[in-house]
Length: 253
Ligand SMILES: Nc1ncnc2c1ncn2[C@@H]1O[C@H](COP(=O)(O)OP(=O)(O)OP(=O)(O)O)[C@@H](O)[C@H]1O
Ligand SMILES: [Mg+2]
Image (cartoon, rainbow, N blue to C red; front, side, top):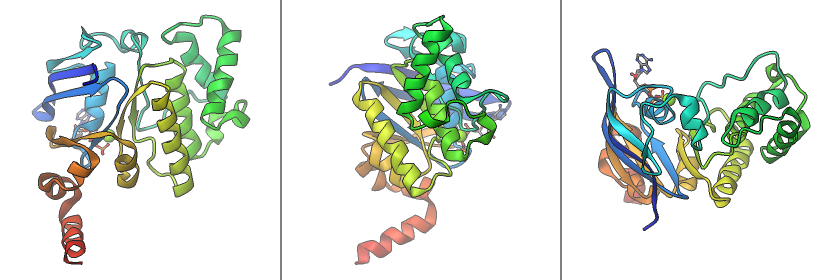
């Protein structure tokens, strides 16, 4: 049994009368890649936002390495070693890639606090996400795949132990997808724990060791990709009638 690095107890978020996330218990193990899936509006992003502190909890608690982090400000949580990417990529406009990522390096866990060292570290990170050649390009000139990798670079600049990724694969073509999947696996191999939300089934099933399924704010299933693929609740709730039919056809031979 590996150690639990992150734990949520009855994590809940209400927006007015809407229970966007409702009493979700979860555990993330040190060193794993955990996938979160669920239909649009299920509450996935809200859950991630409560972990990194950009949304407060209506109920429940979250612990990182046994220390309670719910209630802390986002930058405090980042300092503890958790960083995230955003579904809607929002780089600082009017700045180059290098400048965008260097900001993270300056304010991250080890607070480099020295612009020159931050720059060197930033170039290394940009190389890692295959953006080394674009360091001095303005962020406005990036395509979607590059923007997603910039998001990842910004998260990496904090040298996080735990990285939360919100749909870093959305809108990518096959080759771009393979690139980012390999990157995620490499980050994991170097010891970083990863939680990722994704709609691209091939990718999330391929890369995750375990998957949690959220539907209408509740956790409806949890297991290995194989277990999730064969879970009837998941099939009907998430993948919908079309997939169930397809599966039936495949079973018939
Ligand atoms: N700031 C907010 N104020 C009010 N309602 C919100 C807010 N943020 C999210 N919601 C609602 O909460 C629910 C969960 O949204 P959330 O963005 O967490 O879903 P999601 O699973 O990430 O969906 P998607 O797959 O489309 O990204 C949705 O009904 C959404 O409209
Ligand atoms: Mg979302």
